Length: 130
Image (cartoon, rainbow, N blue to C red; front, side, top):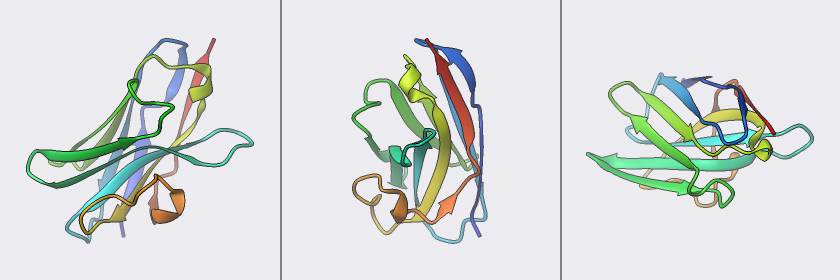
């Protein structure tokens, strides 16, 4: 059973930065697609970014249009940890951020849809004030 534990959330002013981490354990498949989602109060959960590595130093990342150029997803396979570097934060980035994973056969599911992922963390809160 894959377990995901997020950390790194907090409160920052607009324009600031945060780095989220997601520690993963219990892998059973050879490869996983990892992703970050977020959910603001009263809104649906939305995909933020995903990453898949077929091996070596090759990574394929995908981002929601709303975070392109500001957020960077990365992973450290040696530490089984997923990261989300968030720069130039805006008040509209305020949400609970979730780490998610799904066993992958060659790529991440297309479109950053939450129903494609079957492992989830408990979330970490990010609050951006204006």
